[in-house]
Length: 387
Image 1 (cartoon, rainbow, N blue to C red):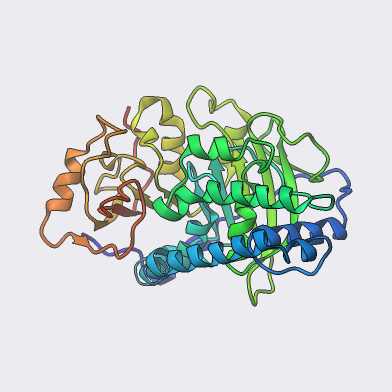
Image 2: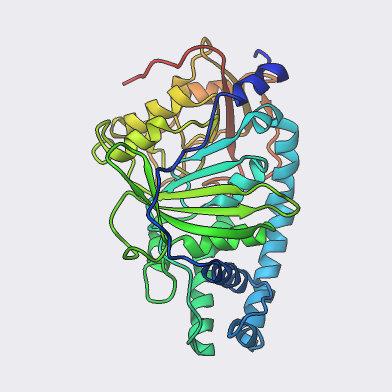
């Protein structure tokens, strides 16, 4: 196994990549007061105190206090069992890609900003893709305590899988976020932003031109759902930071039929510059021929790829093109995903001295904590597509 690129090369690579540049948008009607309301709503659903009315009064209810206490406990457990070990591991093992990554690409991750932020805390731009729609933050101006507590119960339920398993179950997520109480993934994204100490500066909707360029829109300018691709741009400021960062979430179907090379979302993704791709709990979709376009795009454009075994199959990472590191333990896929065993990956994990410890759980094997995490660095031209 060869060493990764030296730090000087990493810094040079970082200079050639940039985040997506939106085209000129129509004049926005979203005011500073609106953005302050976004921030306060995000605080409220995150179990954090805010001073604006009527949220201050709603925070005095037993229901909100119970919700905040339960969320504090769940977050504390998450910090101890997963987040702290993950940060420490990433600081030791991902230093090369961390220092070079200005834009992190996270397909199939849904609204999982939290894992992306913990692994790559210094990225300037995060691009998350999932099937769930963007939706909206709650408006509690006329809310009764009962309505507010109902919303919080539903949101808490939507987070259960992630807190306990490390991933969102699409079926459960869609059911929880498509009802009358919680609408879409924007509340989840906002909660993760606030719970990691970030301040939300602005929220804008994103529309795609046929060229693949992004048109930023006033958040209130369109109906809440317009079909895929549908997107949102959140500008935020880290604790103690002075330069705004950007989180994009796009609701998009990445199967070949919905993501042809002639589509506007493909044009966007093709033009997007990103140093690192992160993939986990991706239902083994890129193992199949009908996800070949997104697979090829990731292989071509990424300098680093961090993934579990549900991402791009190991056979695509030829030693002529990619350096690799293996962590954890590879076992057969869970019962839900039969027929995607990787004999070559199993053999690689059996090589003496090849595999390093993974000190936290991340993935489908939540009942056993036997997880595989693979880290690749490109050392030559893009790998040829295998069909």
